[in-house]
Image (spheres, rainbow, N blue to C red):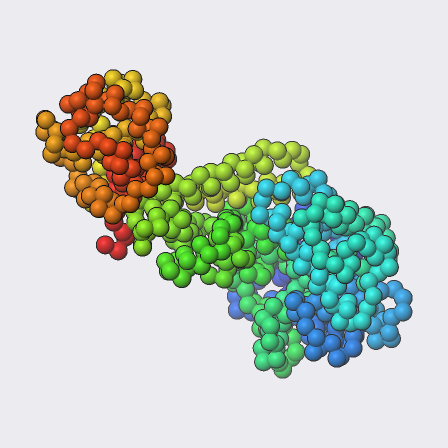
Length: 605
C-alpha cells in the first residue's frame, strides 16, 4: 500500500470531520502494512482518558447506505449473513464501472480515496495457491475453509436473487456447474475448479482491478474478507434498532489500526456529534520490551488463530485464545444417550451435526470434563448404569490414542513445510500453536488419569503384577505352561488374558485348594465373580467361543499341575465367568499393558 494513498485517505477523513490526536502517526511498511504509532512521548503520559480518534457517521459504510442503493423492499428478505447486503454494496462501490445510478456514482466518488486504499492482495487462505492450501488437508482449518466457501457461495447466490441481480456472465461460464446448485467442495474436481477460478481472479485483480465485475463471486469473496478483517459491530451506533449483533459496518481510519488480543479498548458513539470515539489505555502500548514501536492497537475481540487467519490473514504466536478442534463421528443415538441418560453436558456447540460431536481444546481448557466423561461413557458396559472408574480410565486411554494421532499428524505437517515465504511462515505459526495446545492436553490428560487412580481407595484396587509376584505357585505354573520367566513375559508372549482368567478361577476356588494362598485375595474380586456366576446364562455359542482356549489348557494343566489347577470347579463355564469379570473390573493400562483390578465403583460413591 503506497504512502501517498494513506496520506490522501487521512486528508479526506479530516476534511469530512475526522479527528486524530496529534500524538498518533500512521505509517506503512512491507512487513506491517498500515499501522499507527504513538509518537509524542511527552504527551502520551497525559492521553489516558482522552479520545484518540473520532470518526463521523458521514464516512461510515453501513447497511442503511446499502438499502438506499438497492430496492428498499429487500429489507424484508433474509439471508444467513446480516452483512450480505452491505457486502454486495461494497462490491458495487469498488467494482461497478458501468450502468451506475446517479446516487451510486456519487457515493463511489465520495468513497474513492477509501476504496483505493483497500488492499487488492489478501492473506486469507481462500486466496492461497492450491498447493499451499492442500498442505492443510489434515487440519481443522482445511475443513473450515471448505465449509465457509460453501456457505459463502450459497449466500452470494441468495443475495443476488433477493436483489434481482444476475451473476456475472463469465462466472456462469467458468463455474457453470456450480451456479444454482449445492456447492460440494468435497468433490475434488469442484474443489479445483473453484480455487483455480479464485487464483485466476486474483491475478486479474492485481493486474487490473477494473477487470473484476461487481456481481462476480470473486468480488463478493473479496468483500466478505474485507468485512471480516475491518468491520465494526453496528450495535455501537444504534443499539435499539439492531436485531442481529453480527450486523456490521466499515469505519475508515479506525480500521487502519492493527488487531491485538488482550488490548483494552472502548468505542463510544456520540449521538450529539454523530461520531464514533475511540479510547484506550495508552500505557498498554509504551512497554518498549513488548511494543518497541509504540504501536497503537485495536481489539475486535479475543480471537483464536483460526479466527485471525480466516478473518484477518495472520496468526499470533503464543496466542492464549487459540484452540484446537477435536471432532468425533459417533452414532447419533449414543450421543443422545450420553446427554439425556448419562447427563453429560453436550451443548449445541458440541453437537454440530447428527452423529458428530466436537470439542474445543485450548490453553485455558485443554481437557473439557464432558470430553473425558464421554469417552468413559463409550467404554461403559451395557450392564452398568453409571460410569465406573474402570470405564473412565479405559476412556482416557482411548482418548490419549486419538490425541497422539492428531499430535503426530501436526508434527508431520510442520516437517513438510519447506520455504520461507509468508504463507509458509503463517502455516508454521498456526501449526506450532496447535501443537502447543495438543501437548498441554496430553499432559492434562495424564495428570487427570493419575488423579482418578489416586481417588480409588487402596482396598478397591490391586495390580495383577503384585498378585503374580505374591503367588509363587501360580507364577511357576505359568513358567511350565507358557515359558514365562517374569511378569513382562505375559505381555511379550501374548498370554496375559489367559493368565488372568486362570488366576481368577484359581482365586474363586481358593477354599478348595490343598494349600492355602499366602496372600489375601481382594474381596471385591470374589464378590464380582459370584455376582456374575449367579446371573450369567451360558449359551451354546458361548461354549463354542471358548472351546479352543479350554481344550488348549485342559485337561493338560490339571494333570500336570494338580495342586494348582485340579481342586474346585475348573469347567468351561468358570472361564466364561472369569472373562466377564475381566470386562467389569480390569483396566489394562495402555502405557505398559499392565492389568489393574478395580472395584466396580463410581465417582459419587
